[in-house]
Amino acid sequence: MEFRVDFFLRIVMDIFYYGINIGFYSLIFMHTDLLGGWSMDEMFIFMSGFLVIDAISMTVFANNLWMLPTFINRGELDYYLTRPVSSLFFLSFRDFAADSFVNLVMAFSIMVWAIVRYPEPLSLHAVAAYVMLILCGAMLRYFVRMLFIIPTFWLHSVRGFEMIFFYMNRFIERPDRIFYGWVRVILTSVLPFGLMASFPARLLLDGFESLTLLHFAIIFILFYFAVTRLWKIGLRAYSSASS
Image 1 (tube, rainbow, N blue to C red):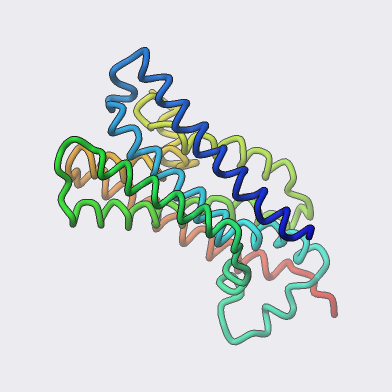
Image 2: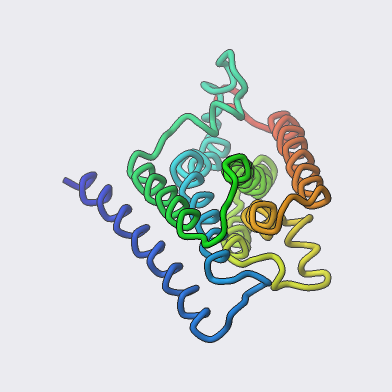
């Protein structure tokens, strides 16, 4: 019974989350015509992107990454390190959240609704590219989260880092063009929460921009190599249960 209640409450919680975001942007556009250079229809497409990123993160990565610091501190990585597969891959994808998958379907449905209601025609290949870039944005969020978890190998507790991550994660929900100066540089390059959903939406709505796509690709590749390299370094400091 406890599992059933938790299952349905998580679904209801995300329904409220989706409704709050739709209501939030609807309320803003009752007082303005543009936000970050986007109209309400364009903002709904952007909003659907970060909802999908959040749903993917909760469905695929959240449970796995939540337990990772515990495994490191208790020396319970041994089982995963002896498997004939990448330990980072195994630990990141070992658990699948079925309750969050229902919410992932709802998030994709909101994306379809936002694209269909958009008043101007969008080509099929542009929409497909947008979806692929949103998936890349979800992976980039995973890379950033891992960079906040890997210090567990040395610090043993990353509670402070996790708090910073979840506070910074709110910037995914805001278009990058509302920020200026060094804040925008940080949010699109150093801690790239500002580009995970914004850049895919810009490439769909504003047309193809080679520099935007190149920026996205470079940040994605850099964070991928940073995570894989730091993971290997962290494993050298790992004290297994048998050591």
